[in-house]
Length: 178
Image 1 (cartoon, rainbow, N blue to C red):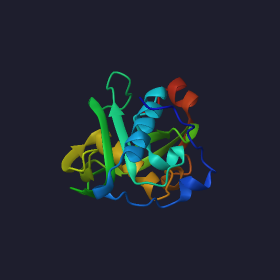
Image 2 (image 1 turned 45 degrees about the horizontal axis):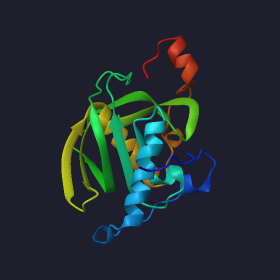
Image 3 (image 1 turned 120 degrees about the vertical axis):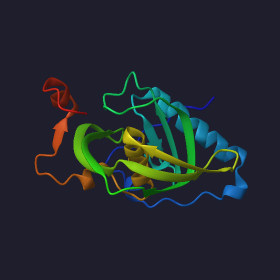
């Protein structure tokens, strides 16, 4: 069982860092323990995903996990805890959707971000097996958001509308789509 790590908040230099690839041929005990810590940290939050730099690790690792009962997006589906090592994605169509996003590293602020609705994600699991999946809707959004962290990008940089920000409280108060 892992330990809960401190989630780094916007302003921390690690969140602006392009993370290093994991040597997939060298998945060792230390790496597996870091992955367990990431899982435990995500379970401790209300988030649906976490990237290694959000806990201070300079590694290309993402964990996603969605409970659709707790998800306020329209097109959520249950996603069991999924470890993605060295994930990459590509769009499968030009179709996009702009929605409010939140982030564990940016508490209380939400921003409208345009994301592709259908993507193909390629990654390695904890056993070093290559996985290729097509995903859509909120899962596609979640993966794109977490992969941005691996490239040193926080969603705030992707908000284009001058009125594209809201606090978590205002989204709930005015029933804005979150």
